[in-house]
Image (cartoon, rainbow, N blue to C red):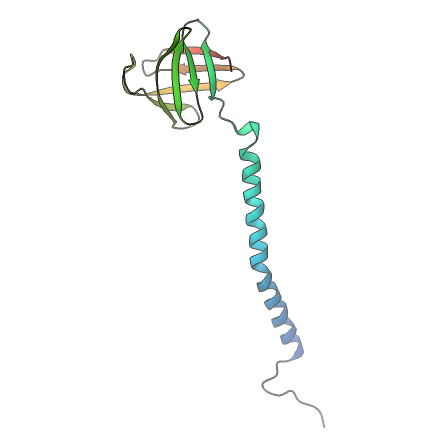
Length: 140
């Protein structure tokens, strides 16, 4: 007499599929953790690379002489001359070529202003709201 599987027992090929699916599902958290770890590491590596530094950061001297600008990573900008600081303020990147500068306190430039900036190759050009452009060279 042929042996018939019980109604509660699944055929062997279905049981194997179920076991495979269970093993695959149990691997999903480990795979997600590995992908997340790699993404965090990649972000940290590229964030710390010199290529990711904002080219605006640093100290700049006007090519025509006179004033100097210093842009810091904390959003501070200082305008100075050879005798020392003239005034300062806070700047914010609006996009790749525009910044908003708020000169609080006594400043001949008034309050917040938007500037178009181009930095790279050791040079910086800043175009003010009135359309005048000043050119600077990196000194630090």
